[in-house]
Length: 314
Image (cartoon, rainbow, N blue to C red; front, side, top):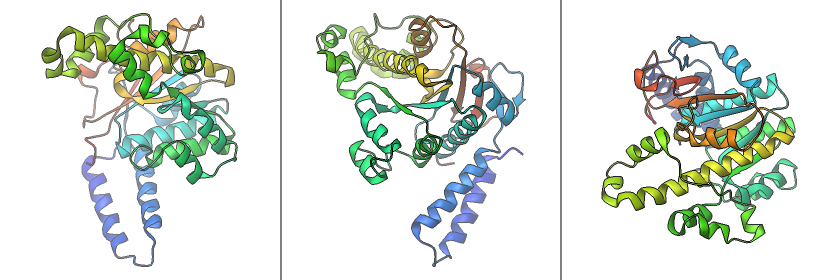
């Protein structure tokens, strides 16, 4: 059954009214009921084939992802339903293929020890969140659940991204400045050969909007250096994780993962293919902040699978 935005809204409102009258429940119990409701809704969405051939089933999508080398789950940051869809998919992929493992854009390489300590039971969740500087704003419950699912399955989680300070350095001082870092620092960041060209660059400039025309070519280049440093570091983190199993499932902002099929259209995918001699089977699943029953022309071939999840909060 397809869950419309109106249905979700009515369900949430009804549940909220019910919870408001349950004075015996704690706030955490109420929050858990809302999370459970969102997880149920996540499994009822329509999953569309990105090539425009119509809908697929949940089980068919999971089967294709579980047999891949890499799964790129492109998300709308902070979208509760979208996050829940990815979390439910990840748990089902783990069930279908116990060799799967998780990688996350939102954890930087210098968070890896904090993640490893938590997964190994050396620290509890409060200590982990303090060590990794996590809070409700930067660690939504679905992301937290994905890490716990990995812990329960005895699987690693990869802190995939470069520390923000080095990404900022790429923007302000260029790639040459990154090459001057010592070996310990360099282990935390990958340096691209150049900024991306082609369709990816064009979409990035369009996404910058007025900033691009106002700041000129140097501003465009500086922000592209940051973007490509993120892409290169996440790609190498995925390649390095192959030693632990496949598929490696990266949860990442959807801009990084979209249009993966043609060289020059996704810098993340281009970097992945460049950094390994394997013929990679990459599957992409993207959630988008809109409401449609079929693939829109502008979104055709944006990914293997597309789920329209509506605007955040709706």
